[in-house]
Image (cartoon, rainbow, N blue to C red; front, side):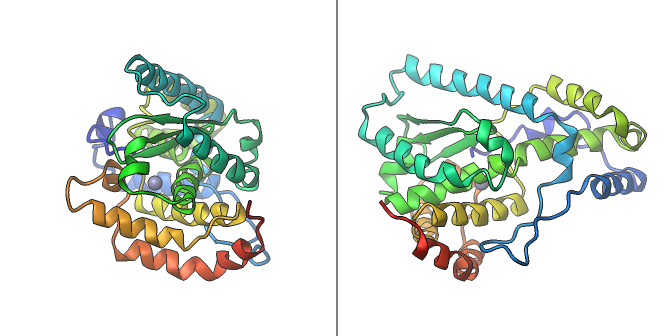
Length: 288
Ligand SMILES: [Zn+2]
């Protein structure tokens, strides 16, 4: 997703120094809300643990409704500039075909995904960027497809990564964490009134498009995306060539996607280390 410099303005108290008490209460809250992790021992694939408990502080319906609104605004804006790819555009057909192969494997990561009204759109722009908002609202920019000359396997890695942010509810968790931090110790005594916290959060009007995630969220999205793509029959080794292309393209103007997704050897090394977990899945997957 696009890098944002105004993230601190979304949360009035985000810049406030946390006292030990606030920090302690936030940690305790995290422990209280922690979901039991999925049974990783028997599970084939990557291991990223359970979703963040902070997500539960914000109603998913609110976040998804907000995403629907922001997504339609982005599409309307593109359409007004005649930059929205129509259903017959070859790249739109291609993106939707790739999404259709990934989507059946999303339910395992988040049961809400079954009810999502998935959308995949293409916007004509030089931006090297792509995103998936909460609720399954995907956009690819022509820049990322054309300038990086992405193969289907590589598109599937990016799409899988962006879908993973939505499935793991990284936006929702970040908002929940901000709410917990800004409300501090008071939240602990209000655990039974979580709906009120959610309503307060909804009032902030968070820009989902300009959201920046933590390194650990990024790493999670890489791994979950890798597995989704492998299950859908896309070669996980494309995760490596993708980052190499991304790094090469950053010699000129750094791609927007790269500003929130720093490349480098750590990322490639993480993907390489996880290949043995997903290659057998890929080898068994149907490829058509
Ligand atoms: Zn990401």
